[in-house]
Image (cartoon, rainbow, N blue to C red; front, side, top):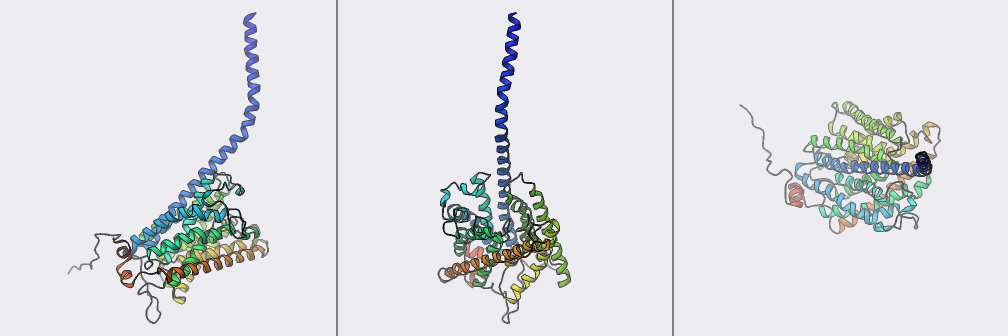
Length: 447
């Protein structure tokens, strides 16, 4: 009898324990799913941020390859330091201006030095992960300027304008479109930054290149443009492939969510636009110059990538391919116009790739967006908003850059001496050579 009673007691206790455990499992189910989603989103955002950081290497290789060997060390140093300085300044000032609570009407005024929790953003990922992701974007905007002003800019002057772009010029635009500012409220679409990142960098590069003037020997006395070939097209091509790869973090990563199924669509649109841009540039230059131009075709891929960055979520694959292809033609026309008509010396085509194609891609969202686009029955409202946004960002960036570069030019000076420029900035600015020990010799002839 005792044995039966003990068995019954054990069975009863087991059933009771299970019944008591069920509510605990049920109550813990949702938090577990939620915590898993947060973990996945955080990892996705960080990995995407790491990919965007790797784009710094891409920019460095493109800029170094498309310019002369005597300035390669200077270019690497600038790309290293604009990220290093930008990371610190954006953490202290830029992030708060971009995402702080807007009490002034045009920019954030709270949270400097990360002194706030930024709960008003409603983030689904930890704040440090979001800050890191935004930091690599800010660094991209500053890096763009370097290419257009390459081979003749004082290193100290570069450090100053890189500081200001990361601290003020870029964050204000970011607030307008991403941080709850007036363009965001108006409904402007710039998903990953054709305007916020690329056009800001491109327009600042335009003003900088205009004020600093062309490189020695770029234009003849009668104003004819003289080509100054880069020293290593292979290095430039490597940079383009790195940038293309990094863009799979730039655009899909802007969802901030690895559990968002749209990341597949965004990645596909990004790739199609880049491929269409490169293909169309190759075809266009083949007809125009009778030979497919290598450097322009490489920039054609970047043009497609920049152009699709605004609408990578809003358009369908066909729209992405069309936008990329049109950007591939536009990049050729823009490079020619800036070089031969405006007489602005841009060694790597940064103004055309980032400024012009960033502007173009943002406006095209108003036409190709599946929801609200002009070509999809949405009327002209979105298109008008996109144009207003692009024009406003151009005005802000151009005016602030003009003031910034004007002050630097009048005080420290923007440009190195002619002697230093001819000798090379590696020696003049850093006292070293990127290719130490290599000597250029005339080719031998076998008789």
